[in-house]
Amino acid sequence: MSLKLYFHPLSSFCWKALVALYENDTPFEPHLVDLGDVASNAAFKKIWPIGKFPVLRDEARAQTIPESSIIIEYLTQHYPGRTKLVPEDADRARETRLRDRFYDLYVHVPMQKVVTDRLRPEGMNDPYGVEQAKAQILTALGMIEPEMATKTWAMGEAFTMADCAAAPALYYANLVVPFSTTHENAAAYLGRLLDRPSFARAVREAEPYRHLFPKE
Ligand SMILES: N[C@@H](CCC(=O)N[C@@H](CS)C(=O)NCC(=O)O)C(=O)O
Image (tube, rainbow, N blue to C red; front, side, top):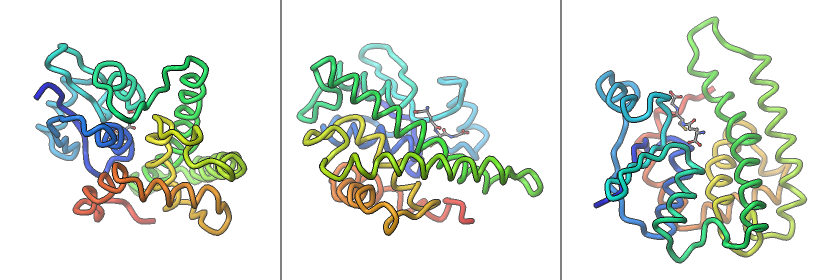
């Protein structure tokens, strides 16, 4: 098998890459990274010193690919399948990338800020930063709400990389800033994402690790 994915089943950005892989039944060897284990962490940092997953390794092409969006671009280019995750049309591709960036930077990253603050040592919390992050999520939800009033997926009728980004971002954002009653279109979109077999599989496979998610 040519592709190896360094990941953790609970990690939201890893879900994004997993959705892309599952969409096209792309064969890969899963390699679980345990950042809490000194040896596993050190071995992973030799591959990608930044130490953030997912990271894809393609032995056939001798390529190491970090960053979830770049992994999806790489898969689209070298291992395409029935779901065209990045459209061929240049304008639609750019719009897809914009929505991918939007969900990563303005929903996913602030959601991470709220969650990782819960893991900080006693007395080292950042309540102001957490409030800013929650406000950022609400601003983004306010933009998603009218946009998803008429669309099935982020780009319309076609499932793309933007939906790979939206799925984990909205799933975990809904845990830290519940929005099912305040943003009904965004919530309905999350419901459709949860019904999508690729995302449902990623969520299901994380179940054994759910206890590791830090509660408030
Ligand atoms: N921009 C990166 C973000 C990846 C990321 O933040 N991954 C988190 C897990 S969801 C991680 O590796 N956290 C471990 C750490 O920061 O030590 C991407 O899109 O892949």
